[in-house]
Image (cartoon, rainbow, N blue to C red; front, side, top):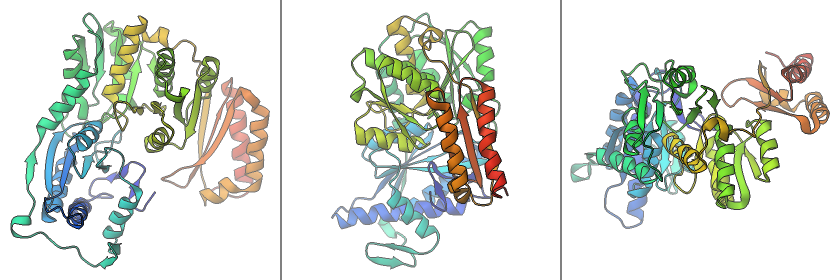
Length: 461
């Protein structure tokens, strides 16, 4: 991770960590950089960048700042307006844009915002380009065999323009509708749109399938995104599904790249459940490429036990859908994701897509003629205890020989009945100690044993 950009973009409190000036400069660099790449290839047409945003009050400020920077550098900016992150990825690759930008802080509160950058292939932006942006922000840009104290402004007819591109968002909706394999007439489906990006998209899709669609948290006002709503506050949807006798409910986050579900009993179906249900279904259909489901190290131990019983192989990546997708591409896998609800179906998308995930879940329900509660049987969630401990130096604490020895000792004692994971936070001076085992008491016992060593060695802040 860099100084400004983390695994999911440049994110922080609006005009405190991420400012309008940052956005302008990011736009300036991208417009200039992609125009320069075109010029060096003999292409005199202006670079094209497509932009989407979520419903935060500050998203308009960042949109205008990015657009100002882009057109000042001679690129044309195409505006999708309020839309989802996966729709920006889809349109970027389908319509041959040089890159895409999504303005969103995902599941964070309204006062945060972020800039997510998407490559021309619809994937997360390459790290080498991110490094160049960071260098430009810090005033030490070296690229194209030169050091750039400043980058030139476009002038006269080379100044860029803006284009209203709401038609792109509508074509994305059409794409999602084209993936529906069944009429959902008679099904009662609940959608929690988190007062975010999905508010004007998700209902249109499920209405087109013929479902009786019930929607909550679809009245964004700029400050209520994710507030007691969506995938991070799913308790509202749980109650709503039970109270209204719905067949299933789906909850999205602020930019709708995540999806969690609620079964007919009001129980949560998280990302691990979704990987289990869809992985099993794909294997039954003979469509599970390389017989592998890609997970992260935070997936529940019970998921791996369930996959072992089904004869399904699995991979474990670092936390972050970026790393999941990289593994999927490099190893020709068709499904992967995170417990948090970032699920990637590589046949249809290059990023997690909450609405697509809900479509695929309903497809399994219809094909198997089973409810969601029935489909998740066979996967027993193991109790998990995760404790964070603030330390002076997280790398030093994690690599302490006595701490490592205790972790090995715990792993040996757990054997194949559980697991331990110790990892450093990517954003704060914290070491995270997580244990999964057959009972919560066992989890607490072993987590505390490792933390006791960290404290005894003087690593605690």
